[in-house]
Image 1: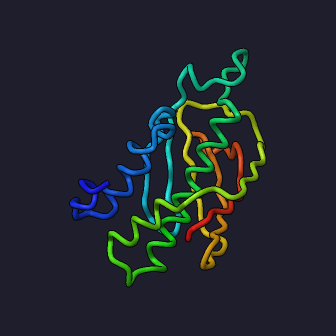
Image 2: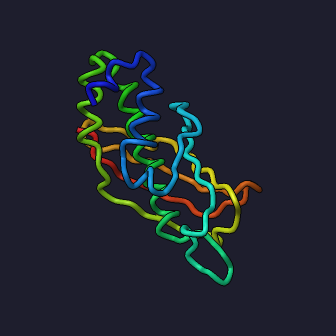
Image 3: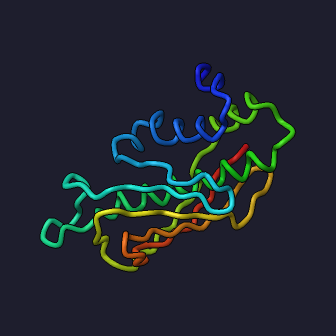
Length: 155
């Protein structure tokens, strides 16, 4: 973590943290598409090892949930970064270490068909201890696959 704090671009640090330093995210092949605090995006490409229904070759529901969860966590973290603007970078990243999922609800609307998926999210509410987010997963044809709501501890 110390070497990441030496990087001047805070967005680059966040991208490395979420895409490369969290082993599960790296295993899934998640990438940060956008770090726009109003609506960040997380992307994933379909691979054979992510298939849940081998007959229809659709994305596994657990992968869908994981992508939405990562997106919700990213939304909560970016919102927290803006809210705590007066803190130093080190203090902000110490708060990152405390970020965790409290509750996650996923509504699967359609089978996960596609070659590329993009998850977007936005903040619903941020308190001193909990942030609540809303997330959506679309395929490359902009078909809505699933939606989620997540609560994240931010203190």
